[in-house]
Amino acid sequence: MARERDVKIIAQNRRARHDYFIEDSLECGIELRGTEVKSLRQGKVNLKESYAIVKDGEVLVQSMHISPYEQGSYFNTDPLRPKKLLLHKSEIRRLHGMAQKQGYTLIPLDIYLKNGRMKLNLGICLGKHLHDKRAAMADKDAKIKIAQAMREHSR
Image (cartoon, rainbow, N blue to C red; front, side):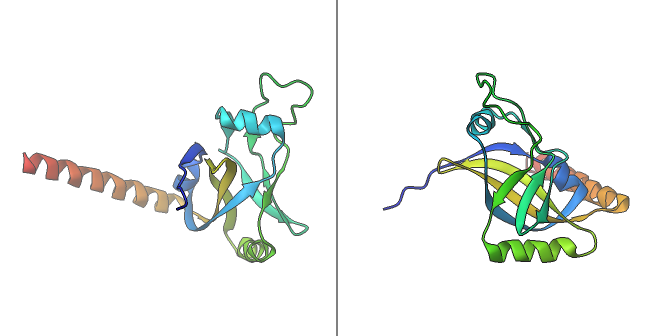
């Protein structure tokens, strides 16, 4: 019987969930160098302003900052170098088609360790307007108030 291993979340892009409607998401591998993997295991990554582009039949993540590994020497790489995502050709074609539509963007949502491999959850996102953000915050506040009222009532 196959044993399920846990998924350890390394970093999440919470800002993306606030700024975009997430239409779809896709799990993909990341092409990394050795010291980048060690730095990721320590959680030293910033996804805040990162995005993905489709270029020459490859999907690249731009502006994802992986801090240099402290014990690394000259093997450390540029923290902002574009990182290639490992996807099937059909998935790349689908992402390219979605990214061409007006308003859609490819945004890394989170990085996690799954079965000993680094994975990235890539979201196909549609940008929110200011009034959409306000409505989402109002809905969240209403849900919190309802939950508090239910707790008070059940006491």
